Length: 323
Image (cartoon, rainbow, N blue to C red; front, side, top):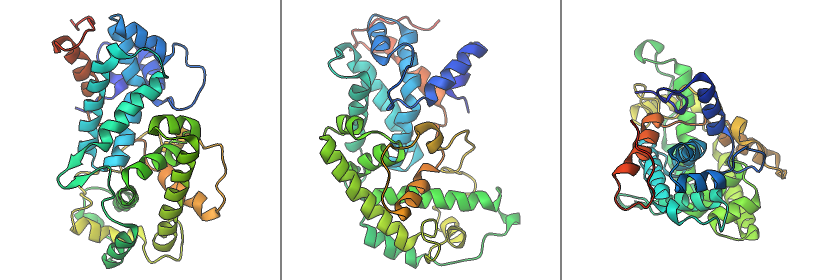
């Protein structure tokens, strides 16, 4: 099923349009949004199921896009997103507005993601070092592109999939805290103050972590990636066939290059501060030009979470159950 949030059954066209707008609004940027998160949370705590659903619509895509970049595997990100929404729903009776709802929600999301373990790998750790990643990349052979007649999608999409797979994978060479701060500050354009609240550090520490992550990641890209440095040895088109042969890119299941309406930069906006080095601006563009991803079954996910409320005996909320 390929439903999206704006395709929840029985919605009117006007509500569909409103849901799309709510889902793509950057929750990390201050501005006039009509009913605030805090007001919706109060309504949800009083038993308003529609208010709860709208809260989740506002934040589901952003939680998922954070999860994708923290975990890389879309299926893991979908599982994490659903688990986070359930945790938020269960904790909602205890929300008293002592902080912004946004801060409260994303702290739950961040703490959940950083505690995820996949086999021997903990998300809070780096999966490898950048020097090791650079050495591994040099070992990937340069090959001609696949014959267009032998693959089910245009070769150009395979190249794009290789690029997105590789650059998102590179984020795993940052430790969990650096990765989080980089995603918030550089990719999503979150201010130092808001990012610090979510990461539970001071704004000064947030800027320091972001600065180190930028420096390390962009030095790696400048030395190894032709997207940042045209003279670099690694070119996406030359690595695509090897990525396919190794199983990193599956022409039958494109994970990082799906049909999408927006890129991250179009929904996240730009950070107010100016990066100093020109190559850093190019490096930032690599990550902000990625698709703004959607879960495979986001409408179904949303409905499962909201409907499960009526089945959970541990909740003190008493929302209306769907007919």
